[in-house]
Image (cartoon, rainbow, N blue to C red; front, side, top):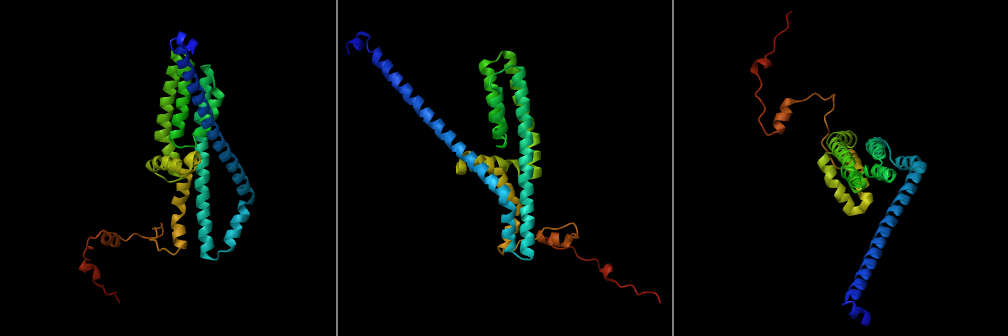
Length: 268
């Protein structure tokens, strides 16, 4: 107490600040450890599930289809094929976008001699699987690294690359890939990502878009199998009926031409 009084109470203030700093550091470490443990669990379960699906997926499909007969089996097979195409196209397209963006970012960081180039490359590649938001966040990390340790020219180069990449990827490449593979509007993608995060955390952000793509391609088949009547889509073989379209819009059908009902007798 005498030492504290001699220091005019500054010793007690320093002790309180040290205790608060240690407590905050321990809380931060505990939070990061919990997040890393959850991420590790998700990755481990994902790897195991992928292994079992790859090994036993064909037998499970055959077992399910063996309980269906006739038209039901045909519809299930078609729906499964469409779902596989959506998932495959989404994964391949997203992986290509992520790798190109992360690789170009790695090259720029190496040329500019910026630190943490390889960890940021890995983070950017996996972050690219979160549509729109992931690439924006990971390229932002690379830009912050340049701001923290780089020269003004390094900051300028990384800033230009970050801006150009996100504009091209977000407005041209990503809508084209997601539109062709999952047939989902970009607005729905932007809404699905936070919804998936709220439901399942990081895993939900990764899985929201492909899950919606699968549902969008198979819901008609599922409702049909459940006995719900759906209007059939017109096919290329179906000739359009303008009168039917007009009546469907609530407008009266045009009157028929009386002259068209006249029967011309054949010459004998």
